[in-house]
Amino acid sequence: MRLRPGALAFVALFLAVVSGGCQFSGQSAIYMTIDSGGYQHRDLFFTDTIAIYCNVLFSTAKQDSTVDFTIYETAGPSIGSGMTAPPLHNVFAGAEIVPGPGVEQVVNFQIPPQGLMVTTNCLGYCTQNGVGCPAGYFQQAPDSAGPGATCCYDPTGQPASCAGAVPYPVGSFKCEVQIDGVLQPEQPEFLIEYPPPVTVNGVTEVCPVAPPVTGIICAGWVPQGAKCDGFNEGEICTCQGAGWNCVKP
Image (tube, rainbow, N blue to C red; front, side):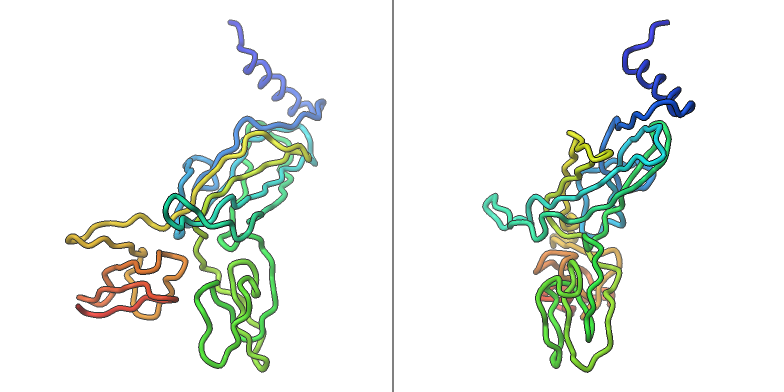
């Protein structure tokens, strides 16, 4: 039986990994998924997607080989007429992983919804960008409490930490991978959009998994003006500004 060149290379790599006699490192695929096992491929995600991973099928005989991930935001959300807003953060997220020797192992990076993991002190409390602050607090600039979060400043307040549940931002992205400092040519692109609308009794709705009530934050999770059946029977909720406004017609 004759082996194809790719199969011969795989066998040679396997022997090198087992024997430790080769210093080769490389990848056979880079792709996006919603699971850490690297099985559920996607190139379209939503603001309420539970997890987004960039994956590398990676092989190496080296103990110290590095895999670096950089997530670039290439465009912001659509602003109509085929136009898109500029990206808020060109470099959205990044990480370096040292996986150790292995053949065709899945090495991945879970992309945090708030992008770069930066901790910023805030006296008062922090909220999502665009949500706004209540009376008596001074609203600082977007990202003043870390990527995706605004500090509602109170000089007499206590240090605050941001809520963990924030939406993924709408826009276009790509995953760039470097192996031992060498940029890989395969750079998967992916989209993040608002959840797809559904039509209920002739009304187009964009709804979270849990039915909303008045005051629950909707900014960032659904588009402004989105309508949805509320938690309380007979109520229709509309995303207005920061939160849902629910009324009975």
